[in-house]
Length: 381
Image 1 (cartoon, helix red, strand yellow):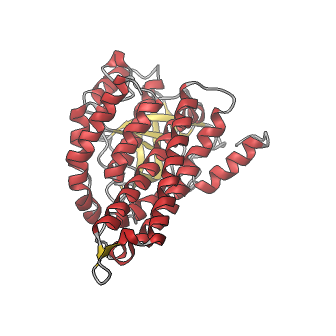
Image 2 (cartoon, one colour; image 1 turned 90 degrees about the vertical axis):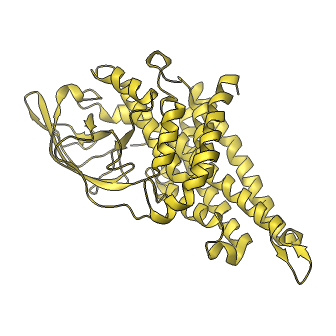
Image 3 (tube, one colour; image 1 turned 45 degrees about the vertical axis):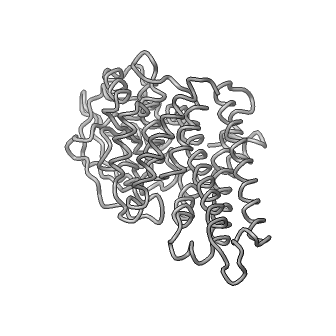
């Protein structure tokens, strides 16, 4: 890690320890938007981490991004997920060379004044986010979008949404177009509050677009080229999601260690750490976290220097980390027992937050299928 990388990670650590950790419990309990954390991320410049330096951003690559998001997730996974979707949104906008507001939006993000997100998944196609059932209707220089989007992170809070729709005039759900939709666009509404099992602060609520008028110049992809742009940004999501899972697992391991050291069996005059079975569980957790951290670094390096095995690594990364986080947080709950089950420890929040990645598109089951297809030389879609 270069000195520049360390500087960005240091900023993330400061925000995480000084702000995220202080509000994470309240954010989770009330299922509220982590406004304090987002403000701190904006002030630190982290909202512009991957924005090109020519637009005032950090110009950082996958390795630094993974380290930053893992640090945030260790203290507040809800904020880390919001951050992940923002980076994916800004990466999409950064690749939209023909979008006339591209520079202005990216500069605003770099200055901490613009939060973006993705609005891909729909009720009709569920976790198959790449296949929208909604369809754009062309009306001269305007496209009208009507859709029922599901699980839009930062719904009602983001400044802009990267929205997918089946391209005008086609019946093929794989032929889509991506659009830039500002938050105040008439017809764009949040359909209801978010009340999830975990990641309770990320406002991952449904959104409705009802005949939303979007100028054709606000297309981020070429007409019918939305799928290709989605796939170019997908590795960032895969890497970031894996980093969130690893951060959660790391937090659960640290929380378990603290509990074993700080809690005593008074009748035996010894700490819980004296019990071999609990030490063994902690050891399994740490080994799993270390292995996943190493693999996360491998995936980031594959993205930075693409080669014939990059696709496989990217597909494997999210699935491996998601399942590892499930295992680690389950061990944490078992090791901490009633104190965890009674919500006296942060490992209970880690346990719930870890459940999201396995069912978040592309789900672990879908990724297993993709990995199998890749190994067999079969097309993924």
